[in-house]
Image 1 (cartoon, rainbow, N blue to C red):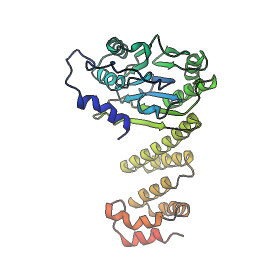
Image 2: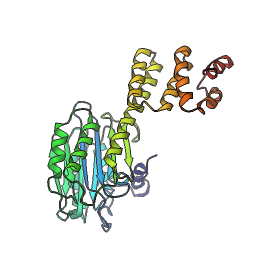
Image 3: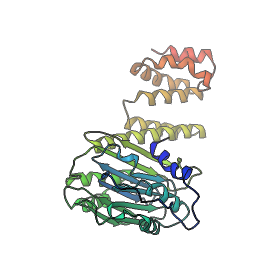
Image 4: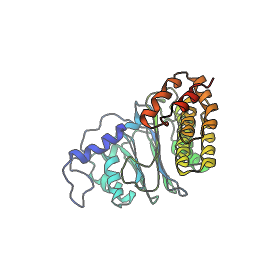
Length: 336
């Protein structure tokens, strides 16, 4: 379980039950602000897919552990500047109950004794936006809203960061992750954080609500400490897409649609051509459904890249991952 989910559950596990009209416990926003933790971020909803997300970059260690929050079919939250992490879980809780993003944020801000040093943005499943930049946010600070998105920044080198983020987001094409990535890169292109770069994070969730808050995550990535966090985040987004395609391929195999499954597998390999684990598990999947001849070249590729995959083959029947068939196991291991 990700760290921010543990943080998100703590208020519900430890706090007393709330009154029906209350959005947060009485001690919300009363903690003394310490240091500014975040710099620039975006929350957004994609009108076509319903996906929602939040992306952030900062010169602060592990920014994603406290700034970025999202839940499928509910909304996304960025809470930064002198961070009050509780905006995340309590904001999502209210939006889960049907409260609009802007109204939710207004009520939480009204409870926060230190709202003048906060910077927070919400988006909900209908694309409604709430945003707040406290009067004491460290200059340069800004926020800017558009159709179903908000960008916000503080501790910036230049005052043009929010405009650059908004322009990049609106001009970019592709899915929500790509457009939010463009927004972060737009901020960096005009100077970004006055302190430099250190960490970044992105969460993208599905537009449909799930039974459990940890389900429906399309992307959930954190760069904790890196010289070029945005470049590393972009690399991991590509790898994330590859693994999502592998999962899609496995689901299509289960559905019996091998043509579509192979297309998904090939697309995954194109995104991550040096990933021998993807090759290995694709081969295992094919062998497990009787497509042995198609699996053998893939096993050879995996064995050549990482010889220890051979040692794993005889162990897989124990967990019903491969058939308990000595002839099949021998055939796979005979690949040279």
